[in-house]
Image (cartoon, rainbow, N blue to C red):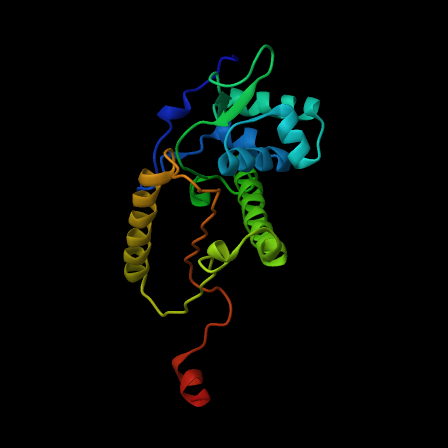
Length: 218
C-alpha cells in the first residue's frame, strides 16, 4: 500500500460543527480538487468499497483512469485499500472513516490555489447532491416500492432568525445526525440501502426587503 505523506486521522475536527471529524488539509483538498476524484470519493462514501473496474463501470471511465485517480486520493490519505476483500491482485478501495468538511474560505487567501480548490470541491459536491435528488424525482417510482416512496421527503421551511437562533437550530440538527450516524453508519440493519440526507441552512442573499416595504405589501 502506498505510504501517505500525512495522517488523515490527525487532521483537525471542525470547531463550528462537532459532527465533522476532519477539515480537509491543503494536501487533501488539492488532491480532491478534480471533478472525477470528487465523484469517486462520493461513490465510495455512498456505496462502500469498490474496485477500480467497478468504479469505472459506475462512472463511465476506464479502470486505468480509475486506478490513477485512486492512487492520488490514497496519497492524500482520503481513501485506503480494504484488505478484507479481494483475491489475488484485485484491490478494493474504501473511504477513510469520518465525516469531512472543506476549510472555511475566509481562512484561505483570496485567489490562492487553496481557495480555488475549495470552491471546485464545494461546487462538485453541490452538483452531485442536486443530481442525486433529480434522479430520485425522475426515476424513483420506477425503482422503489411504496415502503421507500412514502417515507422519502424534501422539506423547505422559511423563517426569520438571528445568527444565534440559526446556530442553535443547526446544533440540534447536527446532534440528530450524530445520533443516527453512530447507530447505522457502520452497522446497517437488514433490508437497509444507501440513503442520502441533505440539510442546508443559510441566510438568503437576494430578495431582502425593508420593514417599510413589507408594510406596504401587507
